[in-house]
Image (cartoon, rainbow, N blue to C red):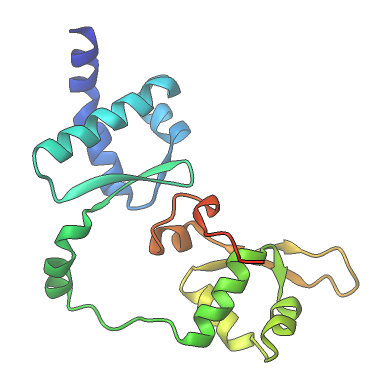
Length: 172
């Protein structure tokens, strides 16, 4: 009974926080706002997920890189595409190749990417940065101190990954 009262008290605020945020929220952020211990958050999230599933909600809570985010269930995507009339934002084959190299080899420099692909990568890297699929994560400690790139949480979100550990293993 006590657990149900606890859940009922925090269900609506948690759902609203995840909805309004748009970006994934960490356990620390949720804990700080709701003033509850971090251990209770996972069970609270699980209960909210179960409620959403049982009521047939068009929303679900997804774990992204140890954070939580509210998003739509895959089954409603045809309706959302019609609603928003999404313009085609597909990545080109060279952009996908470059993104794959960065995802699997990160941290990686532009020169290392170009050595693997055999062509210049300036414009593709800029496009991937603009789309927030990659980010500058530092500088390599070598002569010239080139920028090191890695993927973003948005990359994980776009490709439906919880973490980089979900990437398939490369064949040898």
